[in-house]
Image (cartoon, rainbow, N blue to C red; front, side):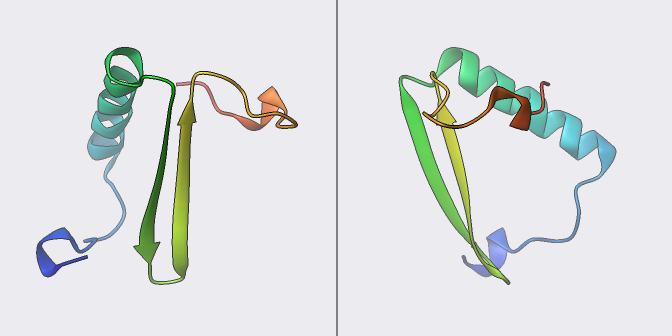
Length: 66
């Protein structure tokens, strides 16, 4: 991560709403089958999994709707 991408703190409420709207748009229009992403943080890596199918063994109630 270079200096131009460094986190600048928590998202504001407006930034979080924008993030969810952009994510929703991505998932509706650009996600093909799945996408797996990783980013490095101060405390280690963070992983994001986007898929068109619930991973086997994962309960649906562990997800938040938006």
